[in-house]
Image (cartoon, rainbow over all chains, first blue to last red; front, top):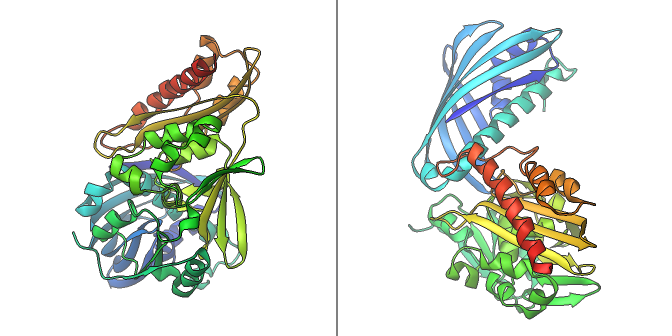
Length: 154
Length: 287
């Protein structure tokens, strides 16, 4: 399943890129990410509670950041396994400076398997779009707030 | 498939159910007809610790006309709506929608309140409830709260019901004059859910459309009002040209669902075609 789109955020590219590689901010952006523990260079182990409405599954996931070319490109790879199935996804983000604001172009590929894929197939694409939307919404809030140290806030 | 362990409490009254929900909070789920909740529990996609059953509360199941409105208790089954003489006379869209819903077992046990509170993105009721400008009454310890249908559906499986609130009643404003109503649906062959479902509620006077309300389900992550179609119909004679211009806007402004059965492009086309069919069916009925 493909996910792609562009998102414009009214913050400088450097600040957004710094946020995207900061595990504390990343943890807030990834929907349902409850804890993130560093296991190596740009490698993390995470606990995710992902789902929609009352239907939720707990996943243990590895998150890694690859192909880092600051401040314009990186790849986020998430592999999660849990009781309702598995999720494997990778997304490439390209950041373009747009006169003080930043345009983020993203393309991702997500594979979902197991129980959640067989019974929830008709809702998976919409769920993926919704979670992607939440990721960027939080990223926007984190990078456009006045407090530069917001990664330690709330 | 066996659900995870849970406690079961049959509430004897709505007040008791409200206080049980206040006590158990997020650990509890309200059980209505159970035809969405129990399958999800068997698959362990939902694991509530406590089920609060409304099934023994008799005064939550009714259909009556009161105060210029039709009032339907949340625990009224789909089948009771399907066969209601009151509704067939005063709001035929509801019995028609009920007849399209699920299968016989689901219609016999499933409830209108349960279905709305679950808010499946392809459920049939949301289309009709939106087209009828219904109000949803949520009861809690603080009393009743009235929620407009257009504010009720938030996203997939998510409504604007607050923690601690129980959907108690659905209110439909009585139609002014004779309404032209219809529900048409592309039924998913396996699940019976709507691939596309369109409910229309029109008033026609002197050959022209006076008001139009169109609810569409299955197309997007939540049911919506096709407001661009509505405004293109209003004040116009419902001829072929008006319909083809108006119905092209059936999926405007929404994210269109895509799954193995129907791509987004195909669904959008279905929305256009079935909106037109719904309008034609409704208008033919009042001629």
